[in-house]
Length: 338
Image (cartoon, rainbow, N blue to C red; front, side):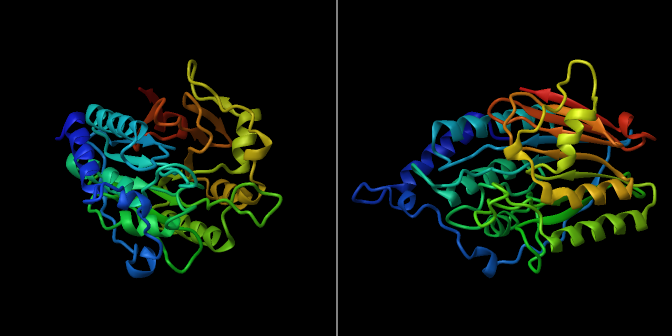
């Protein structure tokens, strides 16, 4: 495994690759534009089955809102080093990056492709499986969220995919087996970019075709195993996060509950997702990023844990799932890791 210093050396060597004979940052000026990549390369990817340990446990290390710009800035190098350090320390079964991995590219130096290459290179060097969902910033400029997902999906270790025929850049599932049966499934859903045409919503929201896909995906998992539980990873919240903040129960003493959701973060048009999760009775966790808390926040509401992971430059979350537990409260363990 490469150390942080090896990663730093690779990043620094990349700086020299940017220079041309006239000393200009030509590639940085090009912004690492991958616009249209999803039209050339399909992200319709067959994802591997993942497995629990002998005790039926599966670990997820969740990062979010890294807001990489060039892959060369001090913030980018520092955050990437932290991701490497925590991944080595905890050796999770899966890393999940919960959106806004990239900044919007609207100001200052920016190179989307080089920043993506650095993240891909990190997890490839560690031979670590990781999953990704877009945030509202990832597709603002120099390539849509669908372009980002298509680019990432070419890496063996990045377990992300997309259904090209429906809205959004990523919707896919990953199954977890105990060696004999699929005992848990993860659902990943793009909660969309900013929607500047809708005055009622600062942020985007899931569209009808995405909702239908999500409903069908969950129902298919339940059809295959009526006892299965599912965990859902999104970037932006559903209305039940606001309800969990008011009426939810604390996950445990010493772990922060969800704060009252600010009005600008409330997205009523995501309510159909809550309906699907509740009606299924099989969704034990809905976990998001987006709001950049300094510490993880979690509340239990209506049979489901609603969890917000911190911004990675401050902290991250290690989630342990006990697939043999017979109830949701005993199934999940959340640990804030620094």
